[in-house]
Each structure stands twice: as C-alpha cells, then as structure tokens.
Image (cartoon, rainbow, N blue to C red; front, side, top):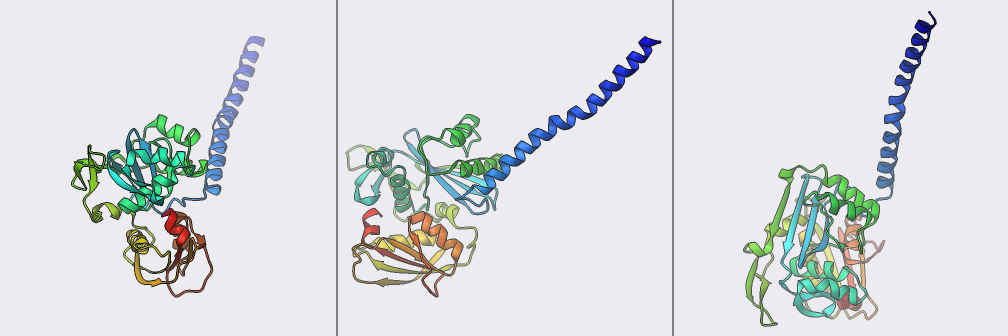
Length: 307
C-alpha cells in the first residue's frame, strides 16, 4: 500500500516538474534574444534597415563593395580587381587599388582613403569600411561571426554590424549576386603606368553598376541639388555632381564663388534624410540654412584637398 502511495506521489511530483521546466527552458532564451534585438535596434546609428547601405573591404588583393538592399531583399557584391589603376583621393597619385588600404593606414586616415577612392573612381557612394571580409555576400559563418565581434579596423559600430548580419541571413540565395568587374566589359586590360599589365576603367562608369547605389527613398524622383563651389579647383564640383546623380540627385545649379581657404563641406536642404546621408558620405557638416533646394552643398578648399 505504501509502495503504491509513494509511486503515485513520485508520479505527481514528476508531472508538476515537467509542466514548469519547459516554461523556464524556453522563456529565458526568448527574453535574452528579445533584449539583444532591442539593444541592436536602439543602438544602430548608421543604418535604419530600410535604405540601401554599402560596405567596402579588402579580400585578398581585391577591393570588394557589398550593397544591402532591403527593399528588393538583395545582397550585391561588386569585386574590383586589385590590379586596377586608380587616381587616389587626397591627391596621393595614381596606383593600383590594392595598395590604397595600406596607404590609408600609413597616412593615419584608415579605410576612409579607400572609400573615397572607390567613390571617386567608380561613382559608388560608400563611406563604411571594414578591414576584414564581413561575409555578407556569402553567408560565411566564420566571417560573419568575426565581422560582428572581431572586425579589426572598421568605422561600423557593433550594433550596425549585427543589424547588417541579421538582414543578410534572411536573404535567399536567389537574392545574392556577385559581379566581378575584371571578368566583364566594365574594365579594360592594358599596360599600366608601372609597365605591368592591369586594369583601367573604360571611361564613363556604366549605369548598370551605379543603379545598385540609387537611394530607395528617392526612387524615380530627382532631387534638386545646388552646389556652391568655393574650392578654386577645376573638376571638383563636376565630380561631386556625378556622384550625387548616382544617389538620385539632379544638379540644377553650380554657383562658382571666390576660394574659401578654410571652407570644407556644408550640407543643408529641404530633404532632411538625404541631407544626413550626404553629410555622412562626404564627412560634411549639416546646416539649417534656408534653401529652396532638396540638397544645398557648399564646398571649399579643404574639401578639395581631401577629395
């Protein structure tokens, strides 16, 4: 009799234990995941998860630009062969692009020299950089883990990195593409300035490439852009206009003025989200100057020196 009662007691206790255990087992991880998600969302400063965002990095000798497009749920990877000859920004001369990263480190400007050089030579508006491959285009688990927690030198915050990774993990295989510029008609192979074979751009950058960088918010509507040029340097305002056109801008006015020796870059405009994006892209100050233009950009001599 005692044995039967004991067995019933043990069975009842086990049953109660079974009911409580699964709740604790799954509730705690769920709370941790939710806290992590909220932490990432609240501390993401660069990417809102809706607009396109681009990252440039080195992969072996090659320079790679990965574009994340939430609207189309796509990840596009553009590979620029390391032996491509480019004019390096900040007037550092003409070299193969594979040497730009180390030059930026030597000159204490980090990956900014690489993003600026890519933007000017290929009209790819990009300002985010990472020393190591983020693995965003390939879903490489080790690269992704390293990108979030051990990225090396980068100007991307940990929460922005986590946000990017969370997006790319949701992108299907059919939404991923790789374009190797060296294996297409976008670059020409020839003898470079150093006497060795390499690549050069074919002239005007194809719209088939720049279309990946058109801002989602702009869509088909052109942004009215005014450029006040106080650089005193020929070609700066024109190149700036070409880059803005890729984003979705339409330069309707270029106002040439006397040189501003201390002038760098200031951005104002009616379209506040775009003002912020362009300020990030060119490291400009945002201003509240009244204007009738969607974007109003004033550049001086200091901007020309680093452009």
